[in-house]
Structures are given as structure tokens and as C-alpha cells.
Length: 447
Image 1: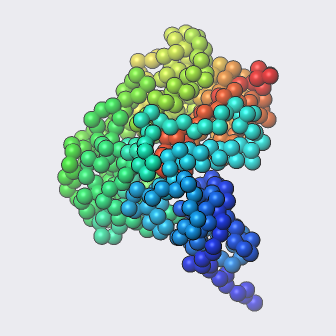
Image 2: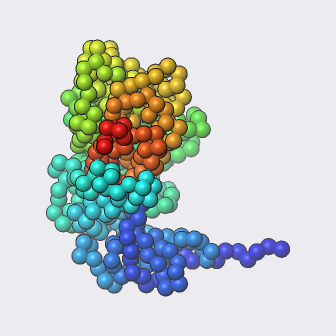
Image 3: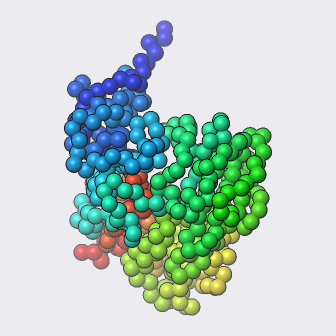
């Protein structure tokens, strides 16, 4: 006997009063029947008509878009991007919110995640409750800063470049992305068609004239003749070579990397090497981490998930010739770049592999300072316990996801480390993403 199929509620509309913001770029609402809705394109306190985009009759929660605003928040602005809105581009979550309101929403999310997952109030986390804008990002109401130095365009079946719709593989063709940095826009990717291409990533380096386009052909597709509006290096990605999705990188012409300028150094960043997408992010984060750690001459430091060596370089310069820095990074090309970038600092060593596998093999039993900038999922309980066992006097945790940060802060507290200071930075304006830097120290010192 088969049960009746689940009935889809997609397209159903509910008039609701919008509740608090939730992690992920939406707000929470409830229907008259008590159904929970995650509503995009809404703001807390508004009354809207929400149209269901995902969910069935027995779903625990439904996803929806606010398709009509009946009572608007004072923080609402008209979305400046013509491609933003229900069913359109999924890249910017808060186009319809004033800049200051966006940062307050992100602060509310951080506060909620700290409370729910770490059991911490802002005061206990040593956070003043604000999300700091990057220098130069304070814009007028209804304006959007052009900050994104790396944009990956999806290409539809007709060869038109665009961006993905929310939680979808469908492409929203666009002719201009408002948050793209000027160096990306100047390439003219959006002005031409890309037959037989699946994605086009456009990169505009900060502090140099380097521009790069990374093309991923469709299966069996051939590369088009690339003629863009500015000089540009071109790379092609091959088929995935492993379960992790690693791809072969083929240089078509130009350099296989870009040169980024930050923290007083030039950094080679090849395809596959992580670099912050906001032009001010690298300098801001290095400053926050170094101010929090206050490295001393002769200290031993770890830079975990070190990428191309940004924090390892800053630490290496500060601990001096008698100090030592070990960086660990899982990306092979990023390790090659890090070793190249820091070859003048013989006190810095970069190891290739996963942190949880490499760190135990090093034989290191103590460290003075630790920086970790883990992927979005966070470091996890076992890694946190190992780091605490090394007895560092301070730890700097750089986090792009407040939920992962809060979970790991709870693990650190179990292991005897508590926040000394927490800062939050709006390095992804008009999206729901936010960057945090938590400085931790042994609980006994914080009393």
C-alpha cells in the first residue's frame, strides 16, 4: 500500500507579518495555521504577501518570496539592481534594505547564533554588537558599493552570461552586476556571448593591473576566441580529477596567476588559491588579527587553513628571526603559491594537507599563537581540542559563517578558551554574508 504523494505548496500565497531575521538572507514568518515560512525579499516588522517557492503539505518549514509589500519597513529601499527580486538573481539578499539596516540585520544574526549555538551574549563574547563597514563602503541610501573583485558568471544554453537564481541552477542573464568591482566590469564579460562555455570567472586583482578570466567549457565544448575590453590572462579548467572536485588548470595565454597587493606584500594567487573578494578585506583582517594576537619576537605561531600565506607572512615578519611560523593548507596550488610568496622568510614553513591530519604528524606539542581561517563548515570539535592542547596564549579565529564560529566557540569554551574580543566586518555588502574575527585566550586570564 502506497501513501498518497506529498502535495506541493509551491505557488500558494499567504498574508503574513514578518518576524526576525534568520541566518541565510531571509526572515521568519508564520501563517495563520502556524506554518513556518523563511521569507526572502522581506524585512522584520513588514506585512507582506509571501508566495511559496519550496515546500509540501507535510514540510516542517516552507521557503517563500515576498511578492507584495502591504506595510513596508522604514528600512526598505527600492532595490537598485534591475535583476534583483523574487525569482530573479540569487546573489544579493539585502538589495531592498538601506545600508545601515543591512549591517543591523547581520548583527542580529550574529547575536542569535552566538546565543543559540554558543550560549554567549554579546557581552560575554566581548563584542560591541556592531558590524563594521569596510573603508569606502559607506554609501547613500539606495546605493550599492562595487566591491566584488571575483565574479563567477554562469552561462545559459544560448551562451548568455548571468548569475544563478536563488537555490537553483537556472541562469538569470544580466548585462551588469552592480556589486562587481570596476576592474571586473571593465573586462566586458557581460557584453558578449560565450558559446559552449558553462562558467566564466572574472578576476580583477587589487593593487595591480592583473586581470584574469577562467573558463569552464561544457562537456565536449570548445573555447571561443576570447576578445575582451582589457588585457587579460585566460585559463581553462578541465574535467574534475577527484571526488573533491579538483580540476586541471590549463593556461591559454598570459600568466597562470594574478598578483594581489595587501599587508605590505605582493601575493601570487593561482587558480584554486583562496583570496578575499573585497579589495579592503585582506588588509582589514590582517590588522584585526595582529592587533588581537600582539605577536612577540621569538614566538612560535601556527597559521591553519593558510591559503596563499596571508597571515603566515604577517606573523613571520613580527616574530622575527628567532621565531617560527608553520602554515598548513590543503590546496596544492595554494601551497605552491604560499611557498613562493614567503620564500624570503626562512622562519616560515608551509605544509600541504588537511589540518586534522598534518598537525598531529608535525610533533608540535606547544605554540604561542594560532590563527585559523577554516572553510565555511568551521574547524570542528576534535581540531579545536587539539589546538587548545597546545596551550597558546592567544588564538585568532577568522570566520565567514557566524553559525560555524558559534559552534566552534562553544567547543573552545569546553577546552578552556574564551573570547577576549570579537569584531564583525561587512565585507560582503548587500549579501547575508559577514566576516568575524574572534580573539581567544585561556579562560583563567579573562577573569
